[in-house]
Length: 369
Image (cartoon, rainbow, N blue to C red; front, side, top):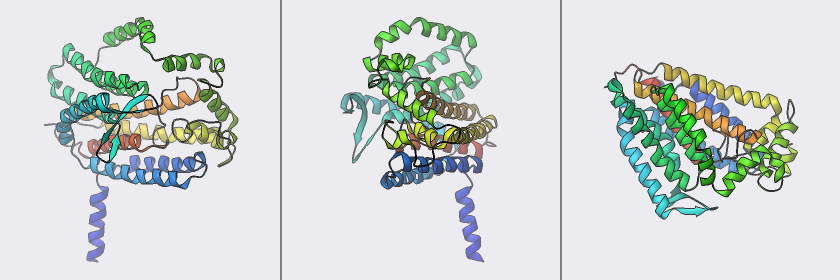
């Protein structure tokens, strides 16, 4: 009897910080991802095992973060942001060049992609900053916040990594928006951005310009820049209402779909499970977003609301950009499908975000200071 009581107490201690809805929705998406990855990788069990291992590690990290109080997370904001920017500087000076991009930095026995750290640290830094000035927000505070976003974004654009830089700028903008950025400022910024497009176009690399032009008409270069989009659209369209069946996707298994385990895994999924499968995945994503928004709405501090809102809207952005990219309505920018694409770094980043949401939910009765 005592052993049973001790086991129940141990389970309760482990389970307490975990939000049940969010946890089981993540598990459902993970399960779906393993099924798709097995087919996309041509039944490569090693890749599926690696994905499963990273899942367990990521879930462990999520649980650990969920146990950290938001007050302590706020204390990590400034040093975490500074370390992230210094690592980006290290990438610029000593980073490893892979496929023409300098994005990785060797640290001891492994290598890391510091830009992934900034996906969490930029909104956390901004949430801390606005929490600190909550009672006296002025226009100059939004100017400082814009600088906080711009510094890492410029480093990442230099690598070059337009996709990650865009996502980091988006996560930062979400915090500014939720903190009360005036509509006039947003409208002015949109007009200035539109006016600067010719300059931005000239600053883009050749391959980035080609991606934009290919989006308009992928048939202009069907065997080059347009190949990814054409093949993914063929796969999605050929799936029909109910798909061709698991392990039966012709575009997938005849290897027409490039990057089919990472950026273009949604094309594999859509071909084999069709519209019905797409709707199932969309429902799971929408439920994750809805639950995250509920947690955000119940947060009792400005830091919690800003951080929760940024994490939720960023998750939506990742899913929207990837699906739009694969469906041919957005340029190819190298954004993975959240929780589904193969790869450990992005998965860990997302689950750190969910861990922060769980921490905010668990500690919502606490006062902010």
